[in-house]
Length: 198
Image 1 (cartoon, one colour):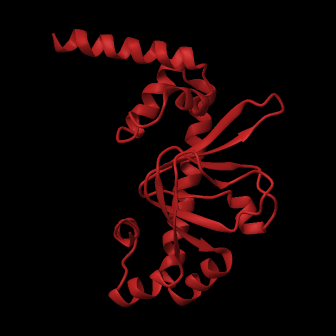
Image 2 (cartoon, rainbow, N blue to C red):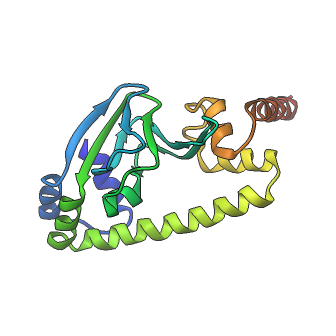
C-alpha cells in the first residue's frame, strides 16, 4: 500500500530507507466502498488522505441541491477539505468514493510531527502546494475563456488514465457543463476519430 506513496514522494524528493520506515508510522489505512463518504459537509476534516487505489470526488452542494465537483482524486493523489483540515473548522466539501478505494490517512497532529521528524517531507508538500496553485490558476483560465469542447479536450488530455472511469455526468459537473453537452462532445470526438482511422 505504501509503494505508490513512496514512488510519488520520490518523484519529487529523495527518501532514505530509514525515512520510509519512519514515515509509515504516521499513517493509518482505510478502505471505502463505492459511494461511501470519506467526509461530509459540516464535519471536521480530521485527515489528509493519499489515494493508493481507487477514485474519489470532492464536491459541494448549492442551495438548489446541485452538486458542483471541486476535484477528482485517483491513485497517487492527495485529497482533503484543506481549510477544514488546517483550521479544524467545519467542512464545506463532501468527499465520496466513486470506486472501491484504499487510502493512507494522516491526522493534522501527525502531519506536523512528520514535518519535524522527516524535514524532506516539508519540501515535498511545498512542491505539491505550489503545483496545486498553478493548477487552480489554470483551471480558472480554462473555466472563463475556453469553449465547452476545449474544456472537455483539456480535461481528457490531462487525465487520460481516468477519463473512462468517470461517469460523463460527473465530468460535466466538474467542467460546469450540462451532461448533454458532454455527451454531444464525446460523440463528436468519437466520430472524428472514426473518420481519421478510416
